[in-house]
Length: 359
Image 1: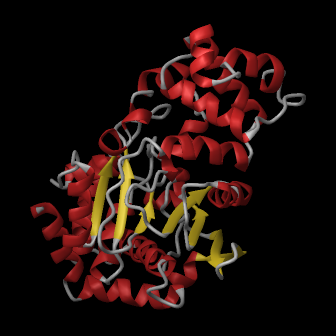
Image 2: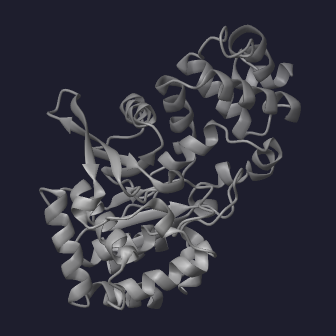
């Protein structure tokens, strides 16, 4: 332990548990930025004893991390990410890496439609990420016959050539992928589930994400603001189905953040939308499927080919509109929706999917 302390600093995880964050959800203290950075450096170097690591993760889950801690974890991770920036500036869609189990995953279809309408989009995910280990972007793309296990450089080329690109976590973020077994043994989500979605492997200036509660959206935005690694222009987040970046049907909240000026200023607002006003006049249960990956791939092909005009087509169009709006390629969601529907109607979306499959 003395050697590890000399290498990393003064705060082994056991000491952090004893003196800072391990006394319980009501009395635990937050880590300083330096403590959080050292803690994650130790974790990524596989230094802590497995029992201590599990206790540390659980203690942080109980007490809930603040944006300063999350920013330190994020920056420590990002120093190890292999970035590959496309020439275009896409919308970054990290979503919920541990995936969906019940409803169709519409992010691939929405991203391709947005790309066909002129808004480049990047999606990224791992493969059966703990704790849920359900279907994510990769698995729908695999079902569609799209190459997923790409190098970051090839992923960037995919974005520039097609308008939609996929980045594979083991390739661009191996330090986090190496934690897979430890995370699986935990059996519950940890702060790693939050920060891995913020990796932004394409170096995009716009992030699109989702939340269960508005307070989480504010925390993510404050994490980006506190991060020394990220320099975003816009963040758009909304209440998503199963925590994913597919907007939930019905009444839902949207959070919008934008950098303002050159002095570090910003603006934040949240507003409510009724998805029925944008064509999604149905319930969340109506987007349920039996086999998330296979059924989502079939829905993607049929919607993009113009073969469906049902609830799935409406949901894909609105989710594409939100991506178009996030990048400010449309001034309003309504304008984004019109562009998305046109990309489907004129065959551009289907052609973009074919290009993606041929890449």
